[in-house]
Length: 82
Image (cartoon, rainbow, N blue to C red; front, top):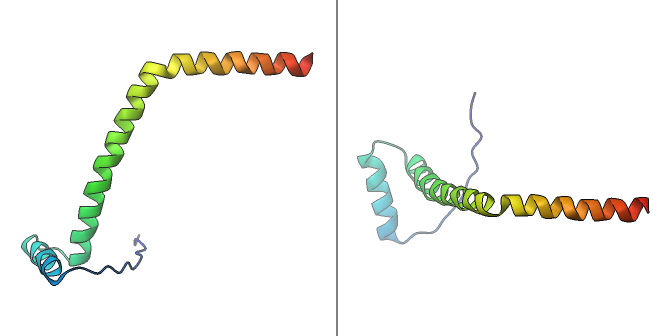
């Protein structure tokens, strides 16, 4: 099963472009794969940090949020049913 790719054009300084080409060649991968790996590594790290932060928030505030949601839901039900 093939993966669909999207073309993405960027402008780099000649030095950055040459450094990227050399790094890709050193790793024996295409320039496209090299850049894709850099992007994935950067965003995966941030995504993982975000998930950890969300987990800490839920651990600390989850019970309060659920209790508050239940309280509000009860008030709404009472107001609707009179």
